[in-house]
Length: 274
Image (cartoon, rainbow, N blue to C red; front, top):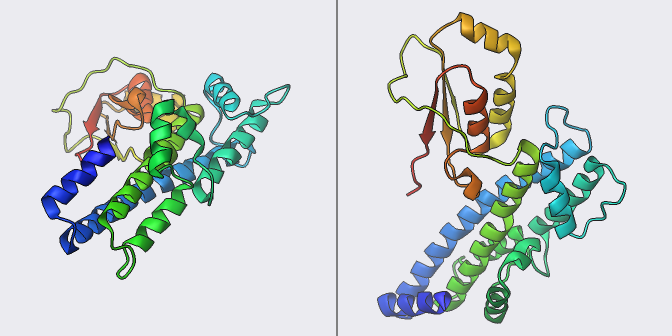
């Protein structure tokens, strides 16, 4: 119904001529850009996840073993007497296929309500692979290609589903397993703590790897002791707070720093995207 309303509104506002096609193309290109961004994020998380499980990255480790096993069972991975790392490698390799899959359906589509899945299949908007839908979106919006605004908007729905049920969901699931599933934490925030003669560390919260390592380093006893000998330090972090409901208030890395930092922590919500 939502897609039918979208198509009806587009026709009512723009008609069905050149203006509608131009608007639909521009809209689809923006959807493709967002899906590509979250898809690349999810891909990098998956690569780090697999390399960690294989022992190629020594600085990371599987932290939420229960969620790993739950996800493995959902994906049909045999647990048996296998180690967590062996299970994690297979989980990561299964999800990595979602980025380049040419036919079939994304793995996590089956999480949607059955009636919603049926509607998506009826409309032909179930994503095949994340990169596949982005590539087709750019192809369709090239001059001389798709001239039907309804087709363009339907593929916009398909591409957006590849984002939410693909790259973004994969990143959220694997980051929870790799860095620990977030939990609520009590903290104090003082907007007046920024001062010229104090140490400020500002970390962007979207790609978690460097921030995670800084959070780990911040728990080092020597660093904590030095901070206590040097009063007036401040840790300032930027968090998007939108990688799943569990991160709505504090990102997992931010939450960890708040818990373990011996100094004031200023948490800044990222500005909404225009």
